[in-house]
Length: 238
Image 1: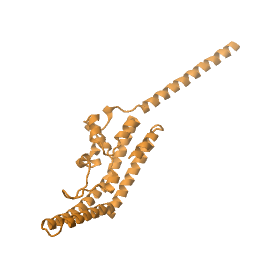
Image 2 (image 1 turned 45 degrees about the horizontal axis):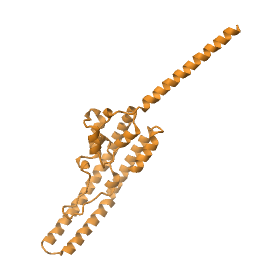
Image 3 (image 1 turned 180 degrees about the vertical axis):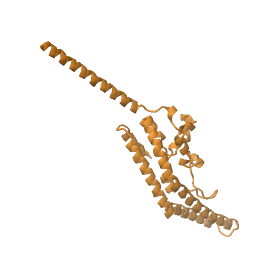
């Protein structure tokens, strides 16, 4: 009888150990599956993860107007479209056609989340969530973004008319070279001040900052404990 009890207890011990071990293996497999980074073939073009450089939009780099008309200096890639003009690539991943090398070269100097995705090792699930966040971000930011560019363009056009008049006076000999240079510099400074302090533009920039804050908060909500420090470091560098 005692032998039977001992044998029965031993069987229970063996069975319990097996169940615990099997459970650990499943959990381990699950963790590995969730933390497995996506491969290059799953990346959507990084243009889809472009962000609006709000600082440059708020206080844009304006040319001095000496050799040509006043204009806002932009990276070559930004001239091809707004960040959200690539929104369709998020909605249809099959439109991805570029190699990784091409992406990195094209996106140089333009703020985007592609670099963070790579170093953080996003999973397929995280990337799918990020795509949704980016679509919401694009919908949120596109209106204010277009309005800011419209305001900037109107201000630039106004000052280019004044610049044209100034050149006309100089070419007709009605003002000296020294006066011309002083007036052109004053015109440039006045343009830069107005383009950074326009009340309508300031309101729209604040709206864009809210869109970006919401995006960053959403991203933070899907990160693992290992990814969060990487995210904080990425934010500091922007």
